[in-house]
Image (cartoon, rainbow, N blue to C red):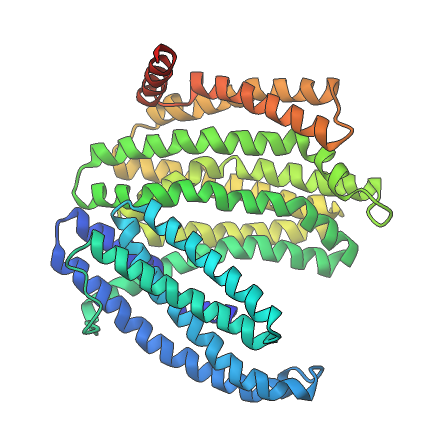
Amino acid sequence: MTGYMGIFDLGVRASVGRHVALYLGKSDEKGVDETIRAGFGFFTLVGGIILVSGIILGWFFPVMFKGASPEHYHTVRMLLPLMVITVWLSVIAAIYSSVLAAHDRFDVARGIDLGVLVIRTIVTILALEMGWDLWGLVLAIIIGNICAVIGNRFFAGKVHRSLRSFPVLYSKKRLKELLNYGIAAFISKSAIKIIGQSDLVIVGVFLSVADVREYNVGAMLVYYSATFIGLIGNTFFPTIQRAASGGTLGEVRHLFYRQLKITLCFGLLVYIGFLFFSRPFIHLWMYQDNFSKESVSAAAGVMLVLSLSKFPTLYIHPCINVLSAMGYVRFTASVSMLEALVNLVLSVLFVSIFHLGIIGVAMGTLIGRILIPTIILPVYLCNKSNIKLSTFIKSSVAPGILSTGIFSVFCYYLVRLFSPTDWISFFILVFISIFIWVIIASIFLIPKDIRKKAIGKFKKFNVV
């Protein structure tokens, strides 16, 4: 219940990070300061709203969840307000973390996250061993979030010496600025969730619970991998934003191609691997009495189609990064919502009219992505950033297609000739594939300067 209260964010958390990087790029210290304090002002109001919501939900819990035992009513009434306070603490920590990200100190930000995770895990174990039950779990979350606030504030202050949190700022100009970008970013993020969650709903409504299970098994790894690939874009965005706000379009284009090539290096490895290793992986992982060979086949088919739908995103996400940095976030939000709508319509059509089952639902995602953002976003970016479409195709699309073709042929024959029968043979084939991909990517995808540096360090290591 408290997790859904993140909707009150309205994308302002992401907007604060974007505008901090923007004003850093403009060397506007006042803009940075007012953005941070306006963010605190917004979330101070939101914190009050979610606290009241938590109290109301706590008191109406017996009515909303009649199946719960009455002995838990008092506990929930006390714990829900505490849980919503942790939501507010996590937002405050995120604002300080965005300052670190804007200065490219991802090492510090992720180090703090890891430290908080360790602390929360230790407190959770101790609390449960002492018999504190739900109170102990909530205490662990609160302590973890307090540590996150303290750690991020301390190191953000070290990186950005003029950092101020108070007095909070209620400037109409700054709040409007944060909300204009934030709501559009929120819509884009919501559209992505709609695509994933609506597919499961469609399967449940038009097919069966067993089909939901098979679809989810096939989709799980594909969706998780998207988060990993997205981290590349998150790392590049502050630098791209600073370059865009400074008006250096040449640097923006350089960073765009750099992000695109690195995204292709990791993304193609993952998604081509899913194409050819999905069936043996799901067979080894899930095949049992209540998950038959037919279920394995269906789940593997979903994984294959959804993996194909992720290939265009390797080009789309770098385009969205640059367009967002240049201020075209409303356009990207509109494209995302249109894609979600087309995906929904096609998925229902393929299931209800053409009776294609769970594969049809996955095909709705694939075709919707090909029809809407795959062409629109790269063309729009080229027009807005003075990138020649022919140059974009020659320097990035063509090498991606070529390396995909070569690696796909290798993976096809590798799996066909040495079909894995256990986990050991499976991982041996995976490691062989990764080794071959490193060679292919280094030839066609890795930027020349990175390749030269790597070769130079390798030669230096050999000499030593």
